[in-house]
Amino acid sequence: MKIGIDAGGTLVKVAYRGSDNIGYQTFPSQDIDDAVSWLYDTFENPTVCITGGKSQLLAEKLMAPAKTLVEFDATNRGIQFLAGQQRHSFENNFMFVNVGTGTSIHHVNEGEQQRIGGSGIGGGTLMGLAYLLTGVEDYARMVKLASNGDRGNVDLKVKDIFEGALPPISGDLTASNFGKKESMLAYNPSASDILASIIGMIGEVIVTISSQMAAQYNVGSIVYIGSSFLSNPLLRDIIEEYTKLAGKEPVFLEKGEYCGALGSLLSLD
Ligand SMILES: Nc1ncnc2c1ncn2[C@@H]1O[C@H](COP(=O)(O)OP(=O)(O)OP(=O)(O)O)[C@@H](O)[C@H]1O
Ligand SMILES: [Mg+2]
Image (tube, rainbow, N blue to C red; front, side, top):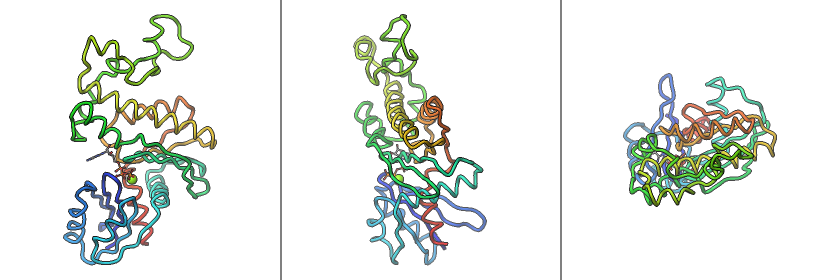
């Protein structure tokens, strides 16, 4: 049995070949031993290829030597596979942005990827800031609460500054993330409001950097992947809207969080 594993900073993603489909599994990276137990409970003599920041840590826990792969190349391979399967047709010249614990930005030309930038603002930022500001620890709870939040209680928009006067840019743009301090004094934002604003800030930072790089590298499409989009329509919507505003096509792949694991799996063929 062939198994591809992407052992990331937060989550371990596994892709394996079932009888007529590809199976997927995820474990928290903190519980990496559970992933190892599951692997040997589920498969007999698995052939494993690992990628991701925790590759070495995981490899040392396996009973047989595993192949390892450079994460960015594995991810690129997984993207090409999913894009083909899901009939997304973007040009040979595109970008992918992996919003994992942190964010990594890549340019792909004629099949070859090159890392062109990144940001420490990513899914881990949501986990940490959410905990610090609201005490919420559970990811599912965070994104659920955020869906009912009102960013208007936390973030300052351009129109809030102009107070009815005509602004030179859209009044609906964020002038200052978390900038509504004066109204916070009068009205305490709820945990939902704060969580929505954290997600908003993360999305806006990522989409700003990504679309500027898309202009610089002259690409038409930006593929966004990573587990940070799971059950998080707020993040996805912000990134989708602003990518389009920048004149670029946003692409979200189904199972996009498994690109690294899929690339590893495919490399065993
Ligand atoms: N069940 C979950 N538990 C924790 N975080 C989750 C969960 N589902 C989604 N997330 C979000 O996904 C993020 C991790 O994304 P991803 O799995 O792509 O990163 P990673 O591969 O572990 O990290 P990196 O690639 O940066 O090493 C988390 O920071 C969190 O925002
Ligand atoms: Mg990752």
